[in-house]
Image 1: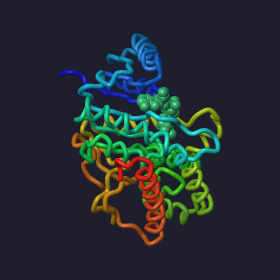
Image 2: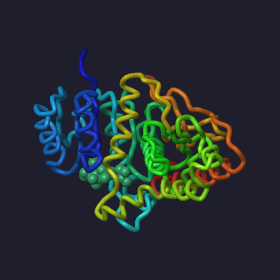
Image 3: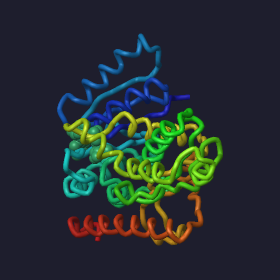
Image 4: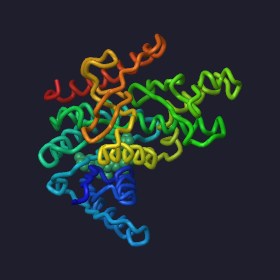
Length: 320
Ligand code: APR
């Protein structure tokens, strides 16, 4: 059987890390696409040359021609510009919307059967625009945000409790931004919910509140440290987890920006929700019941995403 084909649209910091991870995990052959002359070819060759020592079997190709992504099984989109210190994800909207148009058309023409994972920010609005421009089925287009946000949450919790990250699970909802909604009662250590751990004296509510806020600000914390770009190792790892779930039909339950139409009280919006990812793409959305407080936080997150979608429509008439 031929190896799966993974097309990475954008060969920058995240794109290069995605290519390296996909090759090391032997998820398939990798095509790196970018408009920056020489970058995709250089990264593809560099990673391919790590193959003999690492011992992986994967073909890597760099290109600036969309024809080379033909027949891709998975497309992961990072094309666009990242944040600089002082910028919010939303500041990227105008520039990255134009990029989504070009990418959406390129995918539609060359890889219409692919499972598409968008990483470009502002995430929830960009994945919506990418779906609109590509015309692919909604269940085959989603965004990577919740896996990263919950990974950050899990990391901080594991430090607080001094336990393995493997035994910490976390649950986040909503848009990828300051309004994201970490759900503490569904976040656990060895199955014990955080509110119970507070009652047991393992931590305090103030400490959990501070961790929730650090999770919300997780992207900005990295931007502030790096100064020249945004996070790329953890975002790439998170998207690879989603791609692997699709390619291996794992039916993983992963939070991602998915098309919500008739679930969680939403009518047609991309926003972060728990989903099941398998060979059908986003096969199911877990339609959870929220408490009043959680619903209020989720509603404000949904409104923020709607505002960005409306801003996209204001910029590009074809989306209105
Ligand atoms: N088509 C293809 N590639 C493009 C296009 C385009 N129209 N426009 C820009 N690019 C490429 C750039 O040439 C660059 O190599 O996208 C790449 C982006 O890489 P980086 O600048 O290194 O950004 P990165 O850190 O990888 O983040 C990419 O993901 O998390 C988000 O906010 C982040 O939107 C940003 C995206």
